[in-house]
Length: 175
Image (cartoon, rainbow, N blue to C red; front, side, top):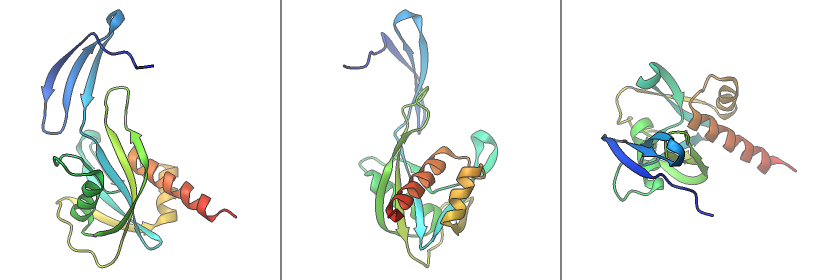
């Protein structure tokens, strides 16, 4: 059964990364919807450690610890190409292998943003990161999972990716 749709849609904002539409639904409901091209994120494995990034997130006015990620803003670029590029730009590492973990809808109450989640394997030594204002942090995988569980990592895509990989790792180790 197809999902119902709005009676009318009005585009009220076009930005470089997002657009905003106002939808009018049956019964008088009005919804502001953020349209997003999608993104990718990856738990970057370096042996038994993971490569994380610290960066200022202006919307929350804080520096957050996250997995490398990026918007799918290059026309024609596949999700795999996007995450490989983002890993290189943010950390200086080159991904030697990728495996998809799944995908998440970030906040479906007001946006259609979907983030494709991966695990990526990299090798030392990294080149220099290309993006300004990012600090690379290499931590044991178990510590990163603990940080996702106890709130030191708050970013939803990072929490989801780390916990999905931890769950997969536990399942692979089960007798």
